[in-house]
Image 1 (cartoon, rainbow, N blue to C red):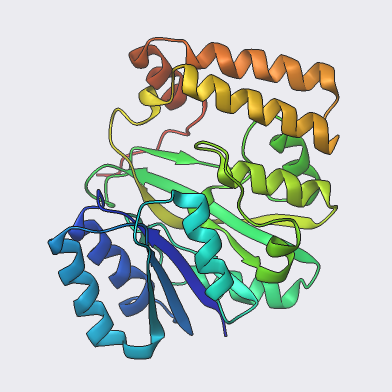
Image 2 (image 1 turned 90 degrees about the vertical axis):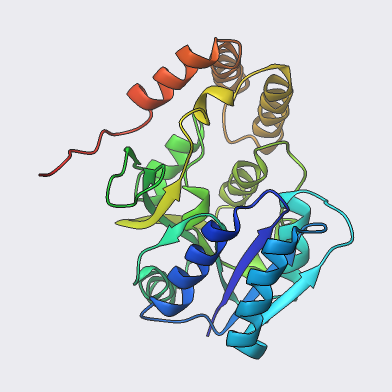
Length: 277
């Protein structure tokens, strides 16, 4: 038994949310025991209609938590996590498409490896059609490789993770960190000495738009990078010297023109997907 946890806000595309729900319920080989959906503030009437349709279909499986105002992804997930009734929790992003055996693979993995706290996987990125992915983000598999990787960038594809609720709450859950709540959480889990892992399999088709990577810039991002630097120093998972070097490098990217930053993401941080005839 396990929980699927998700939050949704008013800008979500209703059709994308519906497709996501189909992928985590209709098409899954192992269905969630419960789905916790946090409505992060008031939604559009179209989203309300889709959610009502799924509530009628799933009944008590779908637990809806309505927040009176938007509090942000991290706080919304914390509220949802507290409401989860099962130790294993699988994160769901409401605009992505999940492969049919995603839950089965991760739940079985966590049952087999009781010392692993978080397990993720690989993603294929797409804009409109999952049969035409634009790139693949590959992350390391083993605990040691992930610890090294985490010193440079997030060791997980956020939308793929499944974890043990008690351990996540034990390190303080999600904490406010603009655009980096997940990375912040992963570093605290690593600092605690817990085992983490990624599966080699693609678990999620992650929906992107063409300008997304290029928008990851500006002084708000640099402020968030500074918070990341301070966290690394506080947790002592990286020497202050190297943590500062990575802060400078990452902050330099945040000041680049959007088109150049987008090209860097697509060229160096994503693997090209070979198109088949």
